[in-house]
Every structure is written in C-alpha cells, then in structure tokens.
Image 1 (tube, one colour):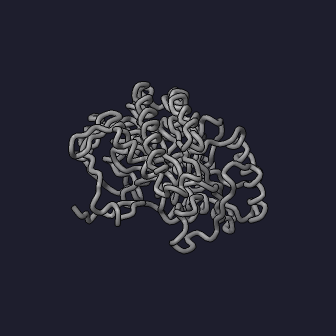
Image 2: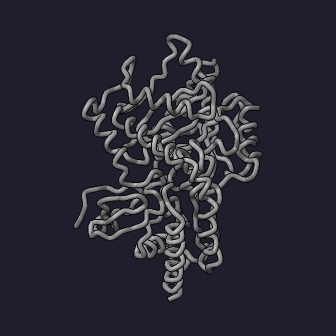
Image 3: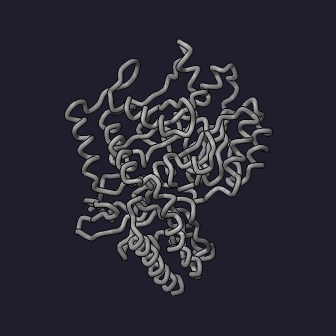
Length: 420
C-alpha cells in the first residue's frame, strides 16, 4: 500500500510501497505487524537504552499527563518534573555548578549549545567569536546548526551554505584542531564540537590521548568545548555522559536519546557553571532562545523514571561492562573476505565495515546486508559503508552471540550474491 508518510533519510521511491511496520517491543525484542520477532541490535536509533516495554516509564508519563500534560517554562513558569530533572542531571554532570537547558531532542540541543556558546562570548565582550569547529565524519543532528557543522559531507551538501562561520578538522588529530584555531584566529573561534565516540559517522573511537589533547588546546585559546553526548550518554559508554571516561570537564554537554530511552522526545544542554554565570548573575542578560516544548512535564517525568531504572539496575554502567563481550563476539567477522574492519571496544556500540571494492560490484551492499540480517531476526543500522550495532543495555551474552551469528550468515549470503 502506498504511504503518505515521508520517512527521514529514505529513498521514498523505494520505501513508499514497502514499509516495515513494527507493532510492539519487549526488552531487546520488537515485533512486526505479522508477529515476527526481531532482536533490536541498534536500540532503534541508538536510544532504547533501558529496553522496550518498560511499563513504569509509560505509567510515569501517563500519571503526569493526568495532572498537567504540558505547559511552557518561559519566563518564571515551571513544573516539578522539569525542575526535578534539571537538578538530577546537574548532579550527575562532570562539571561544577552545572545548569541544564532542556530541548525536545538532540538536534535542538546542538543548536542550543552553539547559540549559548556564541552568546556567552558576546556577553563577555567578544562578539566576534562566532566560528565553530567540528570534525570530519561527525554527526550533530539535522537542525540548522547541526547541518551546517556536519562532518558527514552528504548530510551538509544540497542545502546551500547554512553556517558559513564553521569548519571541520580531521577527526583523529589534535594538531589539526590547533592549526585550524590558528588559521581562523583564536579571537574568532567560539567553540569546538565533538562526539566522544563518533556514532553515525562510522563508530570511531578517539585515539589515545585525543580527548584530553583537544580539551587542552581549547583551554589554551579560550575556546569553549562542547561534548555531543546524544549517542554516547546514559550508559552507552558506561557512564552518564560518556565523556567522563576520559576524565575531562567540557563547557557544555548535549544530550538526548538515552535520557528517556526514547519513550518520549527530550534533549538538552548541560552547561558548566562558569559559562552559565553571566546569564544567571547579571540581570538583563537574557538568552533569547528556547523551544515551545522545553521542559515538557510528561517528557521530563518519563526521563526521571528512565534514569531511576538506569541507576537502580546499574544499566548505565553496562556500556563499559559489556564492551569486551560485544567486541569479542564481532571481531571474528573481520576475517570474512567482505569485511574491511570491525570497530568495537569503547562502549556498547560497534561497526562492521565492508570492503571498498565490494561497492564496485554491488553498490547496494550495505542495505542488502542489513536486509539479509533482518531476515535472520536481527535489526541493524546502516551507515555509509558499514552496519552499526548498539543494542539496549539490557542485552545478555546469548543475544550478543545471536547478533554475531546473524552477521556471519548474512555476509556469507551476500558473498554469494556479489559473486554471481
């Protein structure tokens, strides 16, 4: 049946009459309209950290909706779930006197963080500091600023120049960042934006010493550090915001996805007390920015219930506890003739990249492999030349093995197809 629903990042000429309809979920499993069961090896879009079907999250949101479903927090208005969530996140943050600006998702969080960084420099008497540096292969959502700073070239092209005062540097080089700050002029650079582990750009962990190195460079030139923890946070790397694994204090941290495990849309920015200070202590210094649904009480209630689960069941630590098991299960795939590289070992996420020459014979190799694996009951996430794995934090060893087995069988069948 032809659909009226326009799917994101999708070739609608192909999808319009061939949708894959999911109806329900339970723990690491989801079920399609025909009742078939699939292992959700990507936690949907990196976010179902607590697993599917958590009744207590749904009940927390429903209870809040029966009292106050939604209301703006502009001006002096607020609600108790928003206040409680901000306090909870500030207490978990790896920086002192943190403040929390709430949004409705990761893309809004990125836009908010960059605008806060730029506005901070303005109120500090340096309005020329507007340039933003990001990394190649990076993904920061698809809102305006997120598109403008995108390190995945395909996501930035075709829309015209959105953020001229931005540039990208090699994702794995501290020296490249220092050189770019000097090229642009330190007096013009507002912030450096990075994912602790690059997600959609290929699941790329930072080289040894990289995170501390880029923070040190930014401190040298008074450039604000924005850590994009939208994918890495809430247990994916085994800590609350991911970046704690490197022992650094960013100036701003963006978050979303795992904060509610996807049960309701919510995101935000955790801001170092030093950066928040002029907005909090100087009357008349207003940040003229915010979303209609910022601090939405039902979404915040869902987030609080989700964080309770992550903390109570120690799920937020499992990204680090299980990273070795996931890497061990997938690493044998590296010996397959169609596989260029298996990337795993930092957090509960991994990528299996295919050989470059395969795409000359079979341009659709990634999507073909994803479908073959799906036919074996496992759902994966397609990247440019790889498939990503980032299951719910509730996954167990047998289920990790099931993912690896489905990959191996899918690769064998793809090899037959590519050779025919």
